[in-house]
Image 1: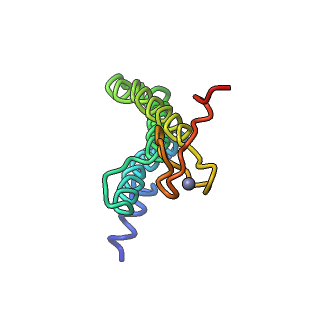
Image 2: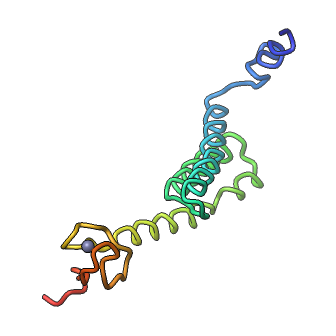
Length: 137
Ligand SMILES: [Zn+2]
């Protein structure tokens, strides 16, 4: 068990790392960013088709912003800063598209089922759907 103790506590440091507030922020950023893969994998396995849930983009955004702040304020490394400087743009754009798509779903007035955007008829009961946003007043 000495090898395990030596692995966890190395040179008087936990995992051999010199821990600072910025190191903690950087490692949290790594953990958040890495966790998105499990979220996407789980969603894909659950539906048995490739899907990218909104949680994936939220984790991407949060993780990359934490890593960008670590790179900017702690490392000051131009390569590291550039790697995360612009990744937030597609993450936010995908979150906006997710939100718009979710908001465009239509509720069936007969059975209450939520139907995909641009549906003409309820897939559950067959009732003609009315898009309240587009309906004449
Ligand atoms: Zn219906």
